[in-house]
Each structure stands twice: as C-alpha cells, then as structure tokens.
Length: 213
Image 1 (cartoon, rainbow, N blue to C red):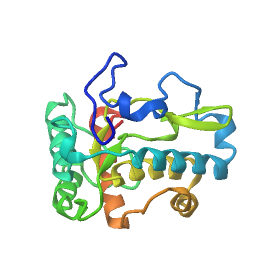
Image 2 (cartoon, helix red, strand yellow):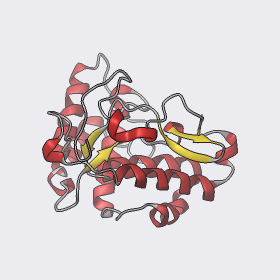
Image 3 (spheres, rainbow, N blue to C red):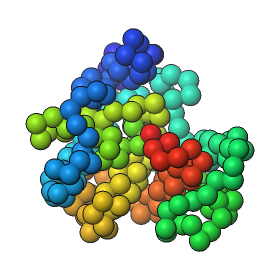
Image 4 (spheres, rainbow, N blue to C red):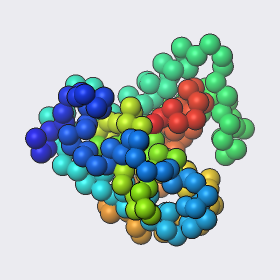
C-alpha cells in the first residue's frame, strides 16, 4: 500500500513491497569495482541519483511498523549498547577521529543528538549503509542497493553522510559538490551530516566495517 511500510515477507525484507527494484540484492555488480572507480563523475552521480530515488519513496512515519523510525537519540543508544556488549574495547580506525578515545567520541555524539534532530526535515526510508560497495549496477545503470538489514525511517542525513564518507574515501573531498548537485533533494546542514558521519564511524568501531548497513 502506498504510504505504508510492509511487514516482513518471503524475500526477507520488511520493505520489499515499497522498495520494488531498489532492493537489488543479488543483482548486477557493486559500484566499487575498478570499472566504476575509474570514472568518478559517473559513479558519484549513480550513487546520488539512486539515493534520491530511495528518499523520494512515499513513507508515512506515523504508519510505520513499531521500531522502524530511528531518531538520533536511538542511534546513540544503539552504539552505547554495542559498546557494552563488545568483548573488546572498541577502537576507532578513521584517521580523522582516532586521536580521541571511543568514549570521548560517544560523548560528543550524545551531546550533539539534539542538534541532529530533523527539525522540520521530512523523515524518509533510509538504507543505513549506502556505500559504493552496496550500490548495484547492471549494464552501467544503477538499479538499487543490497544489504537492507539496517533500513529504517530516519533523517535522510543518515544515508547522505555514509554515502559521502564512501565517496570521499575513494576520490577525496572534491566530489562533495558533485554529489550534492546530483542528489534529488535538499542537503542537510554540514553540522548534521558531521553528526551522522561520526555515528557511522562509531558504529563501525563497535561492529566492524559496514555495520551500519
């Protein structure tokens, strides 16, 4: 039903009816292969345009299944719980953050949660980890993403920060304007993107690369 979120089906995703072909699990090839990394202009556009299609899906948060709407405070609690459950002390590997302890970074994330709230921005269906490795391409055209286990209704900044982190790692910060120009939607404020980027870094530290999606 348009505007609603489905329950789990035989495909194993609670979002399959709404996603349609955007659930590209098992389809095509990932966009982090040599062919696509060699063409940054094209590949940046593919990722931005596919996220725009996802975020334009008609989702009504008020009608979503219980637990499907993710707020910044929920993300902080998830990371804190993952840290508590980890048998080893989490270590941040990202060069931009590893000069600070995990505990200090988690405190910064908690302190900034209120400022990362949508504040009038519409929540959308987010993938949770839309990296180049999750973007699936068929005959040069992006069809969707695989790995929907972390999909939630949330601020689009949740996906945009992860996508930009993936692209900057591959190509450098110069790709950010091109991504913003190709994305079909408004880009959140830099402070909000930075908050979600830090959240992704900490989730990765607790559960390993790709844990956030």
